[in-house]
Image (tube, rainbow over all chains, first blue to last red; front, side, top):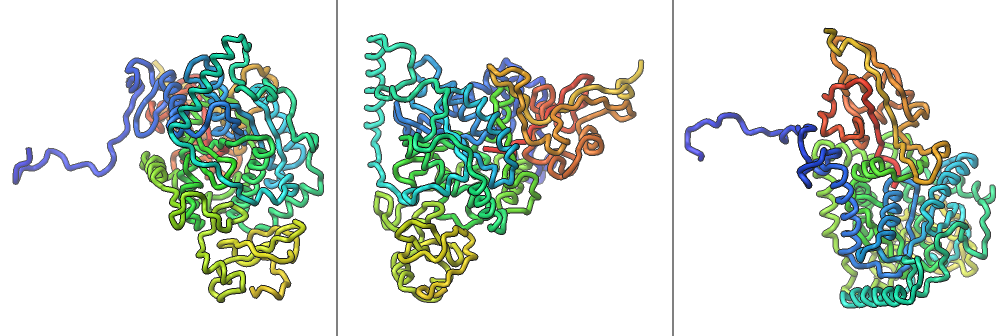
Length: 471
Length: 121
């Protein structure tokens, strides 16, 4: 009770209460077990409860979003790192369960060898690949290892957004699940054998897979020295680490999408964790990508049309991932990245990562607050149309251009000086010889005309000697 | 009786993860985690800490590690008197937050594991 004039016994503390969860504390879930890990701001879990909590989160994220249909082919993007490795392991365990809640899709794994972009020697790349193949063989899903150099062989069709499938309704998902269960029941009655994970009609998918199912047109061969050299030159020509990171991401995404399309996968799963997505959200803001936060950090990303990217690890923090992988022996392969050992201010990504993690250290709800904010982001279609806007798209990130159509029309006529300085004009040649970018790449707009030079320079430092468009 | 603090302490300091993949023989394991890059690539260090007046806690251990084990770029591992944010510390396979973090008093044969979460996705 407050009384006027009465002193409080002690002044109100301004610091958060000191964390003193001693070992005498019991698991907050089962109240019995000895805790081994502290999650969030002080919840101590024992080993078994932590495992259940971790697995449940993975299932819940998939379950509540209801985007992955039974029997659907889903490509798992595996970098070798802890988050994507954990994701692959969750899928592996989830598919092998003999319960009604078993995961029901058909997985494959894609792994992009980015060694050339990171300056790794061929020997180091080969060694890493060998380790990865060991794990891939153990996991047993069909797998595709693709060198980043193959971006040079991508057809221009990757830059087109294919027509979106109509949005599935609640009823459609339930109907699909019911029909799938009925099929399984029938198969079981006919003694279809012990391949419970095969959906009907997917018999051509070899299971388990011991070979390397590359595109039948191009047999498994390492990239040529010329291609590796070209990729190194490309990345060397990009002056800042920030731009290199963004370029790497764009190329990696294009390549993964291509693999997905070529092999009939309609979904791609990436291992982005809660922590990573919170950092990505802040980084994207700093990079001027505020308009696309919902796609960049949300659970599902439909910008590519026919293939949807989903992020099932988005509710797991990096700490949870690291602990789970350690406690339950999830294998992963370390590969040096572009920013390995880079100092804190080397790029916007690094700076933001340091900022977020330091803040998280002091205030353990930082990451989750940013995450909850990102959950509220709505993908508002422009001009109120329900389907994806048919307008022009950025060729690097494939998001719809956020410039006015009136401005775009002016641009193709070599419009007013202010617009010219802000946007770049892309020349898409008829014979697909190559792409060229000009000007500061705030946005890209598809134009028509001959290509000045077949070199991709995302910083737009290259100036074409084309009298047609003033720069 | 001799106070424990003046006896030397033996234990291990490990970096990154020693996860075992079922079905793979021990000699095929080559998992690397990233943190060992700063320690000459050595993943596991058997360590004997000299007996001293003050008790050995994690705080002192970090100072010792910086002086004796860290080969390069200390700021990537240590920040102030603690580890850099993003690096997890496990003491005998348990979260150090349960054991007092920097104030935990080391015991003989303790195993300290540092996991960098900053790598990979």
